[in-house]
Length: 485
Image 1 (cartoon, one colour):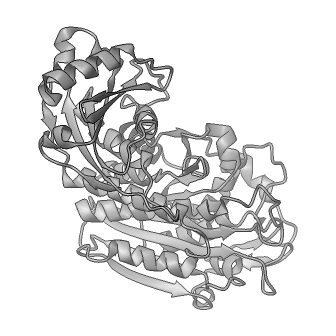
Image 2 (cartoon, helix red, strand yellow):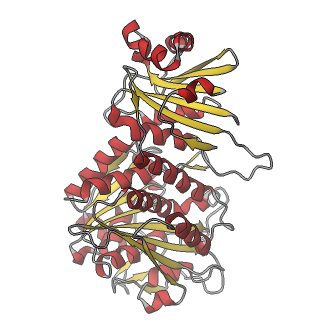
Image 3 (tube, one colour):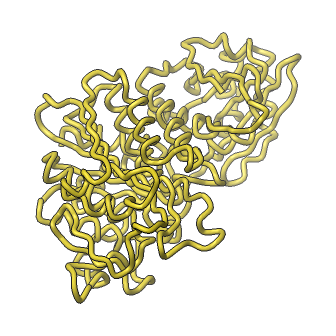
């Protein structure tokens, strides 16, 4: 489905199907309801007010629909109330009513009535996330969606290239998560990355592949991916090299498929593991957005790519891997592989790239869903400023986030090994698993004094067996906040 962002309202009258998304309060007093007549025209505006007044909202919004001549008009009504853990933009409600409106393979238009102009990015991105790109169905879809935004007074709000880039890159991230694993192995994901970044001024890309990882000390990435048909690799991109001040690195876990390794996952647990590269998809989308819109500081991208496959060369329980940090890890769970990639990637960002701030993203633990649920990514940080930036970015972007404890003194003991510096999986699965996994990653950069923020997005990155593009908006917003701090 093609997305457009017209500057005027003409697309609303020429569309086959118009979706109007607004808060319940907009359909009340005549003064407030005037926005619909002003933007949609008198007759369509009156119908929109009637539909909105009759529609129920539930907790997350509802829809009502009717024909208006040859045009279908659907109204998505957002609940006026929301909790403190939600965002004022009610991005999830916007996504829900958009997904439920059955926009078809025709000319569609979406009118977003904003309570505040600051909600534009979150609302537009929510529409994009409701209409995923990827499909291998024999009957192809199509159509177009024109997105128009206006205030409650009927003032049209321009949707600039910065927001358009973000929406596009978040949808690309979701497309990558949805792509079958045989079609998106580590080599293919590297190609897709280069394709997405191609043509962006100032972006430089390098790639370390296969046994060359060992030559660079990247034993974690190599160990996890060495038996797969497609060689493991680390792709590094930089932009804004001449900018002074902060240097922020974005590090992503890119397990293109996770069998669990020799600790193989059971049936029902392995399905959807094509999405185990959701962290790399998120940092890639954020990096592309920031590079296109003008990065606020020197910015690096580190994508750690491997398939956790099974074969004669598989890494084994009881093996000891030497990581880029120089620390040794005794393997006690081959299905705790993502942290091995992140540890190498974060160490490379700190020690080789000399970044002073690192944000990593990963579909790291199933415990994340237990801790913070389907919509809030779990955040663990060693720095208050980074944590605050990520939480504020979550509220602003609609990619919600919630903090978990950072306490190495409480959690490192979970990884004690009799023969190596640490094991890669915890002794107790009931002791803050998501925080423990993050602490394992941080352990490999603890002596660098780098500012670090970790996002576990295991559940937000994929919902209903579809990629969501979660993390692109969150990370791009957070980097914009941190670039000058």
